[in-house]
Length: 183
Image (tube, rainbow, N blue to C red; front, side, top):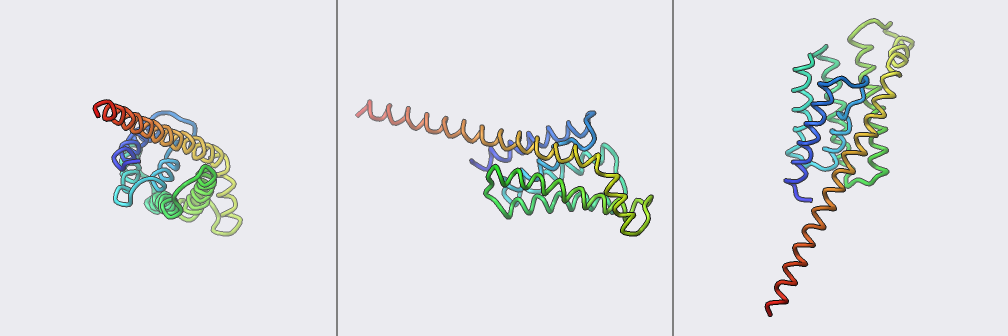
């Protein structure tokens, strides 16, 4: 698929992500992780800043939080996007595995950051385990969000690629028939 179509599609997905973050939704059930995975698998390197810009914009609207935790969140997403970029091209199984791995990475990294910098937990192995246990209810929705939105984003991409291919071949067929008819 041409770069202009991919970038346009990512911009549509960014709009969906921004709207989903700014409107009421179940805790952690957003397309943010799926957006970063999709962008990593499909965007050229020079455009990979787009999802980060969307995240920054919505954080400025929603409100910021402790900078160490924010950097962990941003770093987790950047790592997911970079990993997806490194293992492309994608297949359905790769997208599913990346969605699960991304959700687990985000859970472990952000709950560790929360334990380290937000306080409220003892600075011990048991304190870290308590932080993870407290995050489990949010993990379920996060995992479902990664999987569901990745499925939607990649299905939309494949549908667009198919429609463009059909359209291109239909134009070629018509042009060829027109050419043959004039010989």
